[in-house]
Image (cartoon, rainbow, N blue to C red; front, side, top):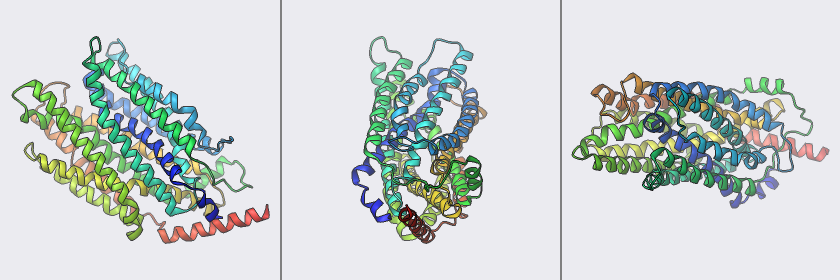
Length: 472
């Protein structure tokens, strides 16, 4: 049974699956790198207000993830349970992305209200398309190693989408802004139109090129209470959730403060002679820093499968996070003159971060199999909602921490920062994310689904499917 399922999986399908995360990651990286500084320096709302808005809207949105997982498990169409949402939600995803970067002619209070509404809608449609997309990994193939391969393709395309948007976003904003009658806020809006259309195309390719093959046991009836009870007893699920939350805090704090770090600290001394050169140098150095991080993330993704094949997914994850924590702490002691070391540390830390993401997605699929093996019931969407939920919760805390700390350290937009603020920004580039990485690795120490144990579980599930098919 497993062989027949596996024989249907093609390279085209893996590429198609990857396109979906390219689309999501383009928006994710825009939110991570550019949304905070857009809100404070262009949209015109205080950093503390933006941080509170992130917390309130994202906590609400985090609660939507398991709800979307439950809905996906109970969806039945000719296309499957999860694929249809890629078709249905692609265009709303792009449209609301444009509205998110639209600046209305309102006072500060009105703008804050508008930010709450559009950001809430954005996160809801992100959930509506990303939870089903993540859940696809659990139903395209039954083979654990092949899931790691799918996850690796996913992450390679995710970082390719990130590289694409890093290369396009600021040049598009600057290009549109250079046109007559186009101000900076309109330039952001037009840039999101371009990015949104690319995302729609990528989602439609994923819908067209993927297939669902794994279905729940035929005698399984819808029972939400039973599914939630089983989830509550799924210890590996909670471990991955905790590690995922801390990993996203690690990433979102480092990424969220990066533009501030280069605009207000690194470039200030290098280009203090003219404001024009200051502006150009800010763009060049920060863009290279971000681009380098995404490129080495991708290398880490590609190395995840061969390294984990030798030492196992759990040990690979723990080693990568502990190394990232140690390297992050060194970042605090670098000065403006240490650009080479800044870029070198960025490459090494990003490599470590890249390795763990394919492993995490594969572990969610393993947790779904473990739940079915243990309870006899399969709730793929509910289990995989943890992937989106951990992203949202970690990103929520990381984004809010970033903006609150900026406010705490006395940040004021578009002015020279005082020494205490600069010191705070450096802490947010080093020790703050480093602690999160350390905790993530500690969580994974308690993950007990070894690769050898998963082979036994999958073999047992294959026998059950074979018996079920023979009885029917």
